[in-house]
Every structure is written in structure tokens, then in C-alpha cells.
Image 1 (cartoon, rainbow, N blue to C red):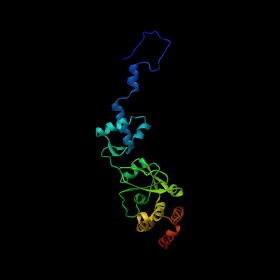
Image 2: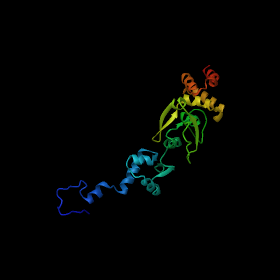
Image 3: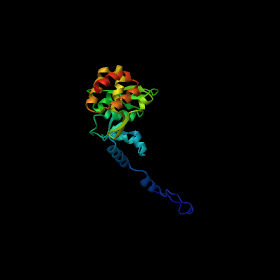
Image 4: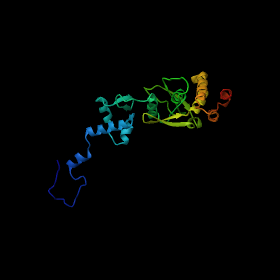
Length: 229
């Protein structure tokens, strides 16, 4: 449907010339919008409302797709295609999306690097000293507060289910285990050092560097001398 005044205002021209064209060309159908969201979910195994906003897609489509069984809500504010095979470290990706200033650390980092035998049911994450404690329903978090070089040095970025996840490297993680031995146990720190060293995932230079950063050189010295002997 369009409207005209029979040419009474020929000197005046409107760029959106006809209502019908505006409706058909400028307003996409609901089906097209939902297809666009599903295509985005194909590219990003874990999807947030923010991802839709960045693509100028309406976030209400997420609710419709969940109700239709075309998307699963895997965590608060995080969605995925039903039945999609996800990494064993998916919980780390979920946390990275929801705690962007955090860094995966300690037992969770050991698990990522394949060091030791720890299999934590919580996600261990380092956050800045003055950041509020993250409150997530799932997964469960263990927040450790760090600052300065202890928080910024030794950070690697790995991709898990399409999400970039910051995690401390192996040597920094082992040094952190000694620093926070009262939280995780000295036996865990020793196992991490010995196993990481035997797998050649650690170098003495890196261990000494991060021991200095964490101010645990005196604590680690006898154990470093032992594995190097």
C-alpha cells in the first residue's frame, strides 16, 4: 500500500519513496532474522546477546529460538545449538564470556595444560583486587585476587569453543600453586612442579622468573634445586 497526492508536490521528493517498498525492503521477516541468529550460532559455539547486538540483530530472537528448541540456554546469558559437541573446557569459555577481566588460574589452569591429576569441579579464576566478586549460578567459581605483574604476566590466550580464554602459562601456574599453597595444598604444588618438569612443559628460567614475580623464590628454591639435580 502506498499513498500519493496526485503530483501536487512534484518538487518535493522523499528518499523512502513508497511505504510498500519501505516495508518489504527495509524490514526483514522474522524467519530471516532467526536464520541469521542460527547462522551466527554456527560460527560461534557459545553465543551471547551482545553478539547479536554487534550484528544489529534483535536479542528477542534468542528467546524465540530457545522456545522453539532451536537453541539451548547453556548458562545465564549464554546459548548454543542443541546437541553441539563442545570442549571439555566449555565451562572456562562460559566464565571468560561473563568475567572478561578474569584469568584462568591454579587448578583450572593445571587442567588446561595437562599437568598433575587435579580435576576441579570449580573454575579457578584470578581477578583484580578491587573487582567485585563475580556471582554466577553455573559454573561454580573460586576467585583469587591478584594485582600488578602477578595478574598481567604469563597470560596466554587460548580458543575454547570459539571463545578466547585468558589463562596463565604453565610456569606461572606452577609458581602460583606455591604462592597459594594454603588454598590448594603444598602436595598439589609439588605434584605440578614434578609432573610439569617431567613432561618438559617447564623451564628453570621461566620458573625462577615467575617465582620472583610471585615473591616465592625462597619457598620454591629447595624444590627447584631438587628437580634440577
